Image 1 (cartoon, helix red, strand yellow):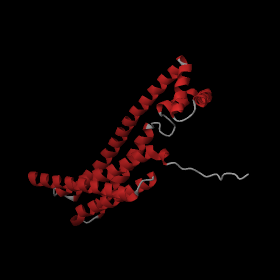
Image 2 (cartoon, rainbow, N blue to C red):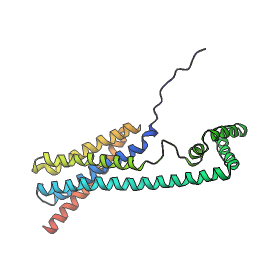
Image 3 (cartoon, rainbow, N blue to C red):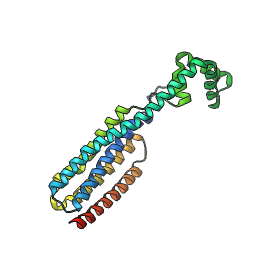
Image 4 (cartoon, helix red, strand yellow):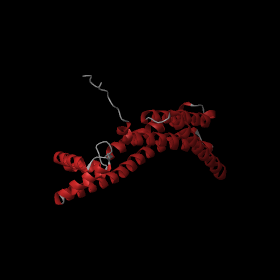
Length: 234
C-alpha cells in the first residue's frame, strides 16, 4: 500500500503579529524621521540642527511606538482574558449547554449532528476551555495578543528605520542633504515594502509602489511646510 508522502507546511499566519508591528515600526521610522529631517532642512537651518532634530525624532519615536503598541495590544490581551474568564465560568455552570453550543459550531462547519456532538465531547474532555476559546471565541496560540513582544518589535523596528535617513544626513554633503535623505528614504521604503510582502506572501511590486508613493507624498508635504515656515520666521 502506497504511503502518502509527508511534507512540511509553513503557514504565514503565524508571522502576522510580529510582522505587522515590525513593518509598521520600520516604515514609521523611515518616514517620520526622514520627513522631519527634510522639513527642518528645508527651513534653511544648519546641519547641526538637522542632526539634533533627527536624533530626537529617533529616540522619541521609538519610545512612542513601544508604548503605543504595548498599550494597544495590552487592551486586546485584557479583552481576551475577560472573555476566557467568562467562558471558564460558563463551562463550570452550564457544561451541557456549552457542549451543545460547541457541537452546533461544528454542525455549521459541515459535520453531521451526531459526529459534531462526538467531536465536541472529545475535545472538551481534553481541554474544554481551549476548545471553546479556539472555536467559539477565535482565540488561539497563533493569534493571541503579546504586548511585550509587539512593543519591543515596534521600538526596534522604528529605530532601525529611523537610522536610515539619519545616517544619510550624516554622510551626504550639505549641498545635497535634502536630495540624499529623500532618495535614501525612498530606496529603503521600497526595500521594506518588498521584504514585508515577501515575508507575508503578498505581491511584491504592489507593496513597493504603495509604500514608495505614500512615502514620497508625505516627505514632499513636510518639506514644503518646512520651507514655508522657514521663510515666514526667517
